[in-house]
Amino acid sequence: MKKTNFLSSLAAVLVAGCMFTSCEKDDLNATFKADAAKVTLDVKVVDATDGEVTPEEVNVSGALTSTYQEFQNGFSGGEVTVTAKYKGVSGSESMTLPAIKAGGEGTFSITVIISRGDIKIVRTAEVEKDAIESVLVNSTHTHNNLSWWENASDHILNTKVTYTKYDEQVCLEGENVEGASAFVSSMVYSNNKEEVLDIEVSAWALYRAWYTVYGKETTYTVYRGDVALGDVVFESTYGTVAQYEETAHPNHAGHYQHGHGTTTNAGGGIVLPE
Image (cartoon, rainbow, N blue to C red; front, side, top):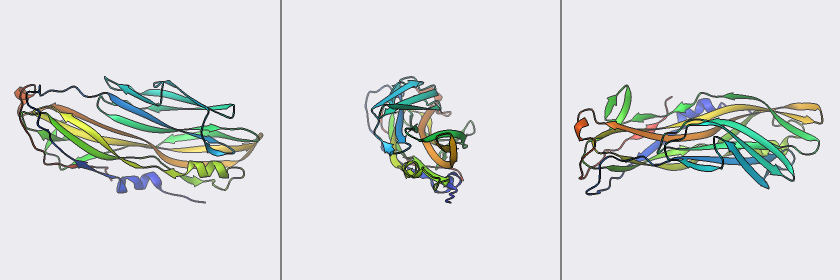
């Protein structure tokens, strides 16, 4: 039996740095409108007998209608359902997605189980873990009990924040359940990837960036016919959302909507709290 204290150790090792650049853009209105919120679904289809497979068909419904969508005014969140077909047999899975501000981006992994033949796999329990949210370091200001950087300049600031997109799953117990070997092998993975969030900040503004990691513990019961062969339990980080926001600089609020020029940035970083 393999037990891993996966999510509880995540906060201690999950660190993201920030890389900053600034660009001079003369004669620009110094207040911007954020880009669309971007939402991505990474769909994995696992057949009870064959393991991970390429589906013949994937359909998305609910809060999303495709595996990638943009929402100009931000994503309000909600339940999404993915249905996949493999060798003529369909399966579906649903999950609830969080809201994402305009300019933010979120990626979520969802697994659809297909059961054919005498082995059937059913999700019988799922517990959401507490979301782990980042905190700013090397911030320049505290405002409304939050940590902020500043753009104390007449110029729009373009910058980038690097963060880790997490997509990991480990088997906590049940890896040796009869008939489940191909299933378990396909459900254990680590697809973490470094990503960059582009940020554009108005002149004379405070701004903050953060990202949130979502995890859960899921129990599947393996059946042969009507006979339960045992439970397999997984722990995963299945979603990462990176976001930012700005507010008028409290010491220069009157300049928030006007100006042009140049600016520099001292930099900073984002880490998850322990």
